[in-house]
Length: 456
Ligand code: PXG
Image (cartoon, rainbow, N blue to C red; front, side, top):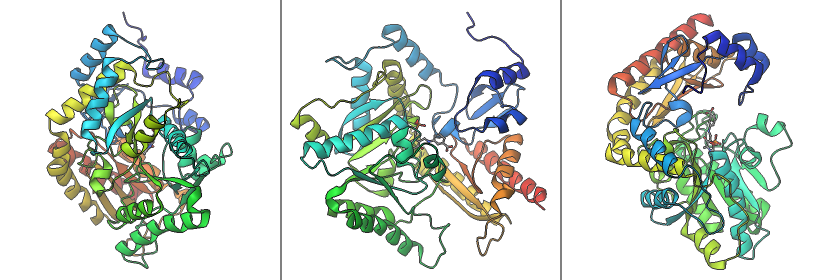
């Protein structure tokens, strides 16, 4: 019966080192310390091969919204796998799970969204964005509208298009990216600015970088703007309230498509169904993934607004794009169940009105720690900034690796927290209890205390 052998922790570590190339990993470095082998999980906790219990402050990778050990999701997958484990949606075929999920998701999305295109991940969703945006302008006889404007320090995935849309220099340096037709403007990161402007003015000024870029390139060359409502992997960067309305104005004025990447912010993370709802913007396209299945099976997609869908459908002609696993039946069945549970358990309202405010208040108090320059959180995605000087917001030297030190203390004390440089981030499962929220903040504080001692 058991397809996976029983092995000791060190046997797993040795085999891991011999055969497994991990994502985003320096293997020379990993070889020195070996992997932490995670063997099981329940609720908001993961357990390693030594039986150590760790609060998963990152919900896997921003995805296990409903927590671990949900039998309903397992049963949904099992039922669908027995009935129809796979079939494609090419060649005039479809199946109930993908059709049903399309209805469920478009019912949750803003009114102008009535169609879904499926992928297997967030990266693929953003590849679809590039293809679909260009297809749209082609169909409107404006094929010269090719350029997509994104932002520095954005994260939109790791495929050729995903990494190109991402604004991460280290990724671009490996392999000649970005691909042609993708440009980046400044991110709305107020904490990282010189604070010569008020937060509101800074929000307007960074949004207007979009307008300047459109004018520089020529409006007739620009196809779309893409942004995460709140930047996740870049360090939970929450834009000033003035930012998104100004972006919306500019997109409307120049007629360019607005894409909000909802891979992290979709399905309840920010206390609304989508990040666009939180900021009150009206995008034309919304890539999603992660939380749609609570991470139990891989699924992504693009919510396609009527402006784009009408053109693609009415103008006709084949869109030469799609994936073997577009609308995978088992993944769609799990997504349907995951969204049903999210609704029936009032998860989105809970994040907005209960656990969100509860954790935000306690998380905010981390700013009282001598190492913390700012602590922020929207819904259940938060960050704090480690600084050498609280007043001037001066950072520690990069080679000191203070964020990594803090991360290591945190994990060894039983809390998964991620370091983006010296910005520490969390995004726990949305089912987090009050007691677990208290534990999360206590452990973050302890990690800071230990870091402070270690860097003296
Ligand atoms: N868009 C956004 C906004 C994301 O956060 C992707 C697209 C790509 O999704 P896939 O499913 O292809 O990974 C992401 C993914 C991190 C981390 O370290 C974040 C992501 C992925 C891996 C690591 O914070 N986000």
